[in-house]
Image 1 (cartoon, one colour):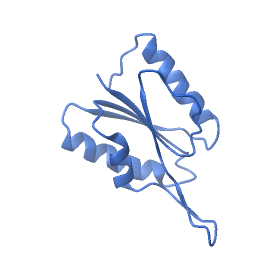
Image 2 (cartoon, one colour):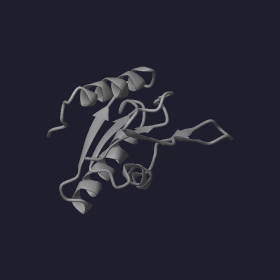
Image 3 (tube, one colour):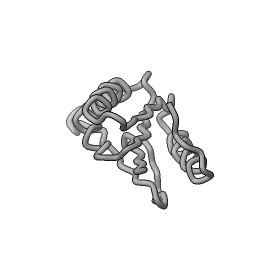
Image 4 (tube, helix red, strand yellow):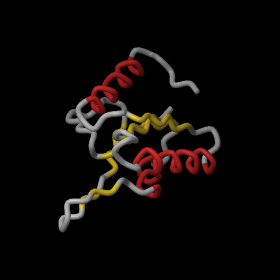
Length: 117
């Protein structure tokens, strides 16, 4: 089973995860006025790639629209790819807690826990 973590670029994962793919989907920042924009649905879909199981982690839904666009991407991905699953997680954070969540899920997967709906 191929597993991939996809998170917006607010997640600051520094070390590669052995045996698990990780993709950061970039938040965009407009340099003129410093405004940021969440990743679009297409960016999330590209991040999901062809993985059988995706763990998608977003910055807090209270701070950005990334969770909403990731949710639309999840529904589209699962519709286009029957049998594949996306587990969407709202980190409710914009800081290092995102990295801690990814690391904990990796630890659980390595200990033999299987993702289930």
